[in-house]
Length: 342
Image (cartoon, rainbow, N blue to C red; front, side):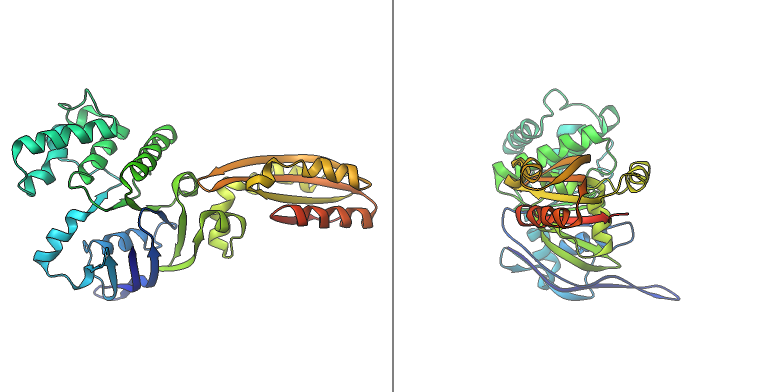
């Protein structure tokens, strides 16, 4: 388990004091994929660099696998870092070294014998899917291939924890998905604990079990990904969730919906897990004297299950509409009235 308590980082500049990380406390279970999301300037990159002491914390403690990282001497820290791999947004490869040589670098530092080193490098090349690119230099690789080299290098010393700092933000959507699939596969095969820093809710949705939302250096919300998706409490979290589960950012669609001339309530219904497969709307039409118009719908797959969003218009007598909404509320996760009768 990774235990973070009261973590704080203050930068002293000439004319001002900046608190980049402010009293963060988190627990990350072994083998988990834990996401930390926030907008630019939220402090998330500083936070992840504190975990392996690339930045020294101003206050607080970090414990990994029973070792208090913040209490280690420099010599002890060098040894402990072999259990903590890290991958970066811009790859941080050695441009004068080939794929195999980049992956071998941390093994050379650890003074692994050459024969063992060569065998380990080939295992990692197989794991990340870089067969045939062993002798290519970074300038000859695509963005996704460079990141695969970075991942292989981070795994060289068989770490127990992998820190990912915006590992996909420099990649196109298809390549991002392939790298996320690779991280998920590595997590399952190796039982590796992954802490993933990002500003993209799509990344959280695709592979994370739990998530913490950062703003102004603090964690403002945390929990299971499905819980945060279905019940975001803070405005920042709601904005992130809307990126993948709501049509609210589609201004033209919302203008059309809100200006429908037909009377009736317009509601957005959220379905979770098995409820997404149930014929709730059909049941409503059979049980209640209401007319239902389906305006928009979307299914979102998370690592924990399916989340569905459906925007509908209910027309009929007020009492019948209210009864129908009560029935939907009892059957689904959440019902949000976005336009009342007019």
